[in-house]
Picture 1: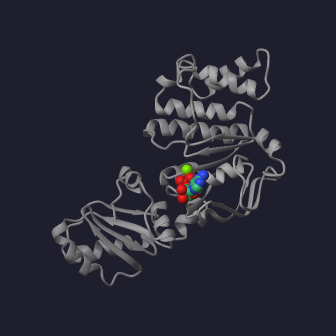
Picture 2: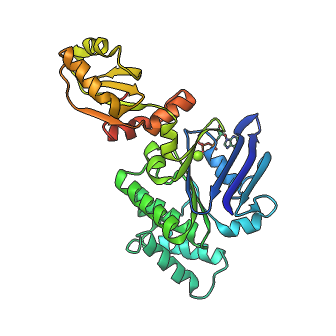
Picture 3: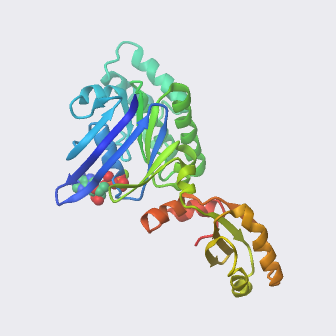
Length: 326
Ligand SMILES: Nc1ncnc2c1ncn2[C@@H]1O[C@H](COP(=O)(O)OP(=O)(O)O)[C@@H](O)[C@H]1O
Ligand SMILES: [Mg+2]
């Protein structure tokens, strides 16, 4: 059985805002599935519909086979959700919030305390459990959000931009926990993100969403392969750019060539086959060649190809990997 099935899902807000414009997808019970898209793409709206917080305008959505509108109460039992703007009571402690949530889910006696302690441990907040939430860092708040979503032992977990605004180390610790939940506890995960790197590293499969529509879907590797090109970068001196361009004009398998401060970026059919020719041609033209790399395209290029524009914030993740901006 699929964890999530969506057919022809549409959500139109008053004023003709088509937030979700006809989405189809299926997520299996063992997947981490991601929605990658910019602000306003319809990510949160989709999560709110799938977790029964919002009614759709049209279409079908099921979680573990249960229709989210006809069987909303049952769906709420099996989904956990951490929303982007979860309201947290700054004056409560993390432990108090989890205990309260456990009681709201019908646990009684000593169980809420036990449950809270177990979850604090799981998300690495045992030491901070008795501190007020107002004193938590961004990363700690996100980990508490995660614990909060897990109180009732959900089978399908929805995370809306779980690491937006976090530093790399905090982001990594959330990724580790999400992977662990998926792998060791068999929880299906549907998450949204604006980060290429998060989609790439964390998700088994992802959909690229823009203006309420899925414009590409697959594993990160499939999506990158769909570009049909490898990327070769060559560091050269800026004053030799024109000579390099001329030298590479007749290169076999060249799809596109870009130049920036760091050097040349070539899109080619087969990187490993072409790289020797690139170096030979530059050498023959007496262009000094520095560092050379061959790589598959990133999701950055996939997004650009699918939507015609770059994803907001794409610059920071590609810069972190030392790639040339183009
Ligand atoms: N309650 C609402 N009323 C009207 N428009 C909304 C509402 N919620 C979201 N929208 C609009 O729907 C679109 C998609 O929003 P959202 O799902 O929040 O996108 P994302 O989470 O990808 O940033 C945006 O244009 C947003 O302004
Ligand atoms: Mg959102």
